Image 1 (cartoon, rainbow, N blue to C red):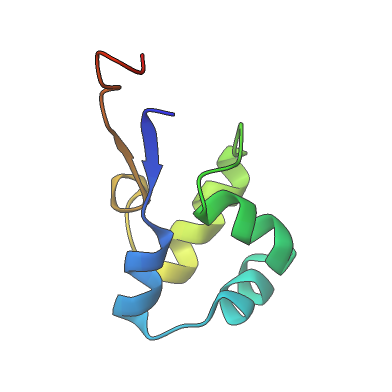
Image 2: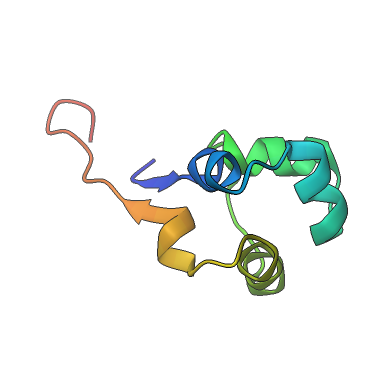
Length: 73
């Protein structure tokens, strides 16, 4: 998928665990893991906004576009 999720980067910068982030955002650790591992097909704007609020960042700090390679795309 050409959208990469960098939640791990922000978690490391904030010295926060996945469990703590999930609790503060109000989603399950399992759903957060699906999102951070790039397996999510969609993310609600409300969830993205909550992630940004808790991590004190912008959406672009969490999500980035990567072009698909010519052989795989």
